[in-house]
Structures are given as C-alpha cells and as structure tokens.
Length: 281
Image 1 (cartoon, one colour):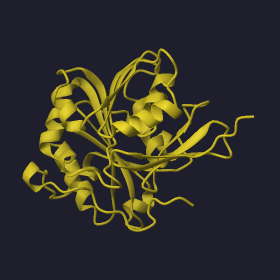
Image 2 (image 1 turned 135 degrees about the horizontal axis):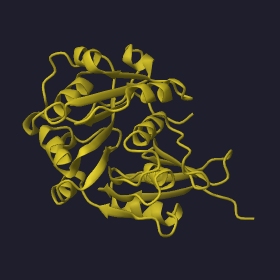
Image 3 (image 1 turned 90 degrees about the vertical axis):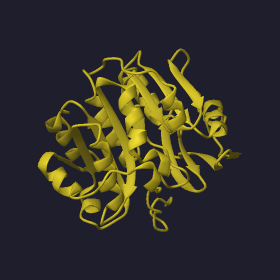
Image 4 (image 1 turned 90 degrees about the horizontal axis):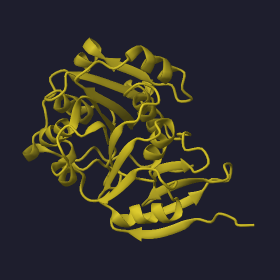
C-alpha cells in the first residue's frame, strides 16, 4: 500500500511543500513559505477547493459557450489547478502556464503530473516578459494569479502590463485576475481603474464580508470588451459553497470612485496580508 507523504523542496523563490489531504485520496495542498497556494484533486480536477479558485472557475465557465475549447494563458502556475479544470471542462483547450519559479513548475509536474496528451505548455519565465513575446490576438482568456510570496508583484499591476494583456487577447477575450486587499481598498480600486484604461466591461466578485471591510481577502476581477453574463455569474456565486457578491456597472463605478490608473513609475505590490490571513488551520 503506497501511502502519500508530504514533499518539501526549496524552489527558486521559496520553500514549497506538497501535503496530501487525508479526506481525499489523491488530493494535495501546495504551500509556499507556509502560505497556501493551490489545492488539486488528481481524481477530480473539476473540484475547486479555494474560494478564489471557485470564482475564477465560474468566470471561465461563462468565458465562452459551454464545453467549447479555449486558448488560455495562465500567469502563475501553482499546482496547475485551473489548467486542469479547463482541460476537463473544455476538452481540447490549448493552454500556456507561465511561472517565474521554474523549480516549482518541475516539482508540480513531477509529483502531480498532468494527464498524457493534454495540451498544456509550461514556461519558466516572468509573466510580463513572456507576454511581450506572445502573438497579438492569440488568447481567449488570460488569467492573472501571480504572487511573490503573498503579494502581487508591482510590475504586474500597471497600465503597461494591462496593455500587453489586451494586445494578446482576442477582441472577445477576457482577462481574469485574483487580487488581495482590505478596506479602504486603495489597491483594488486602483487596479480596477488600471483595467479601465483598456477594457470597457469590468466585474468584481468578492465575499460580502470583505466588501464590508470586515476582513482581508481575495477579490476576483474580470475585464473584457464585451458584457459578461452577469445573471449567470450572480446565480453561480450566490449558490456557491462560499457565497459571493457580483459588482458591475454603476455600482462598481462608484466603488472605483476617483482612483487613478497605476503607472510603472508609481507601482507598488499588493498589500501585505495581516498575520494569519491565509494560514492553515
């Protein structure tokens, strides 16, 4: 009988640990420097454990006709949770995963291998540098989920970065981003203002308590040139195991207020989470 045991490895940007879930036979939690990064069930890749991952999954579900293959770029790899999700919910999708931590990508590929024949390419590179070399109009979805430790790197928060994302996306494409913040939401509002420099349609999904300023947490943003199906998104997020609120239109405009877009010379990383905000147990 082969019992799953934790795996610890020093990678390019920290210490990664893969820990088996005692309740699900082939499920694993990935942490980096003690902070939870990803959860994946190899027997059920459509299972999304983390709140933010479930919300990104809902947005991926409405990014095109159900089941239609998509070209997806994932900025940030983790345990390849979302690429696995897309592979089973949209068979035949072509996916690129970009992560600056090449050793982490190798660890995940070794211990949590992808199914054979699934078109997912792994790239050890800085997200913004890799995007510069990507062809115009080559992706249906770009997912931004890059963290240096527990913070989004400053160079991935700017108008310049958003310009590259918009160039790579097709006209009907969608940019999705996982961003942490807390009241008074200066970072989150500035990111929405930055996205608005290139995209006319913006959506924010977050837990109601976070939006009321009760806790630090993750918000998921979507940006596109076309309206997303807000009714479907609202139903999915409200019925979820972790209910969330969908903000868009005038209400989201009021939330953004007078926030200004972030230029490269003014960029800072996302806020440092308080102690215990993303701890285990």
